[in-house]
Length: 327
Image (tube, rainbow, N blue to C red; front, side, top):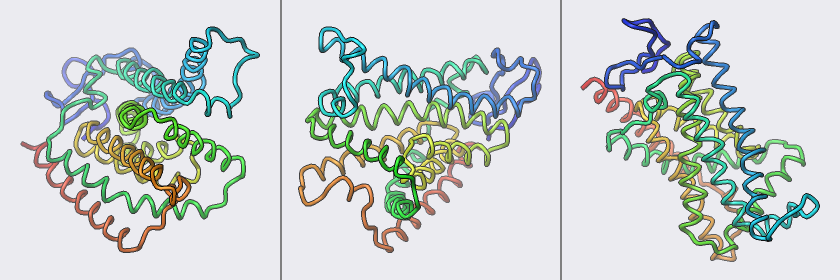
């Protein structure tokens, strides 16, 4: 379990029972600040998320998109920039590629660099370490059980009153997904850009860096809660906040309990991959549509069964992870 830093023989350290020596050096530039450790950790956690979000959404991704369009068209002036509607219809591949590369440069890289500002052992600071295969398998079983629960929560979320402007933003996201599927870029392309890349990059930032900071500021419970809730808000999908928060909380717990960010990455990738595969199935069956996929009807027994599965997974993880850590 991660706990606040302490001076133990030779300089400040962060106790981490999952690391080889049981502690990580806090020898980075940010650790020399004169403010309290709790305040520093909380502020840097929030600033890390906000800064990476702005860099990804408003700098890296737009620049990459414009550069790709300019290369394709042999040059581009400001007056020639396409409208949002034309972007989705004519430059779908460029949009998806820009988003994927933007996540690497705007989310993962800042997370890695921020960790180095705290510790020379930046990989362990981000919990980028291997995990026991049994814990990884339990995590993947858990995400399967989570599916009916998150779908039911999406139905509940849909009933909440939302401003029309926010609903229009979400509709544009659905339109982009439809364009990606209709673009026939291949299932492999979609899985890599929509499942693999987000699953790795977002977890480095949220569960790797931000959660570590929030745990240092207020303990494991605060770290798990803040990481999960902010993950739900980060996606800018108000009608999906509840299921995304639950997913975020599950992944945050996995990271804390297993001492590794790998299970959260695996769950994130699996969750997104299931969504891509479901959307691909819908594409080939005209009787369905993406709107129906986004808010499917979920029977009560499926939700109850999902609760039983997730509850069992959490119990087994709690017991087995504790034994592995003690061994």
